[in-house]
Length: 156
Image 1 (cartoon, rainbow, N blue to C red):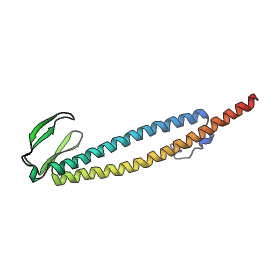
Image 2: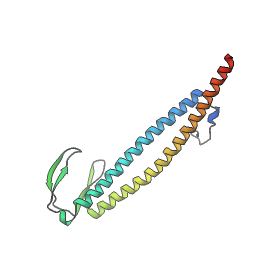
Image 3: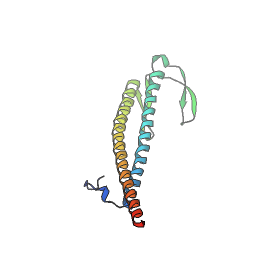
């Protein structure tokens, strides 16, 4: 584990209370990172679904076809596809842009690739934090056992 200045800290020199606090901090960080990982994975799945929708629902064969248009996450209304070569793309924070299907595919593929890179980096951080947590738990367990042994020897 390292301090904010990047200097190493000998966790075996910490008291049981300090170790417990560090363990709680690591657990909280792991929970936050794991939740972030899940959210990024879900976003990546949504972008992949957008790619699938474009490949299946756009093109010359789709023009004039009746479709369901999403108004909210759970409300859809029937509509007719007038221009199958252009789609409306949600570029984030409630902004929509009309793009050709080729540009939309490029946009969504870029998002999927960017998220894949972020997920890989986050996975590495989660792995390092998990290893750190295991190390802290091992040291904590050893200190508790040593304290229990010392207490048993004192009462004998």
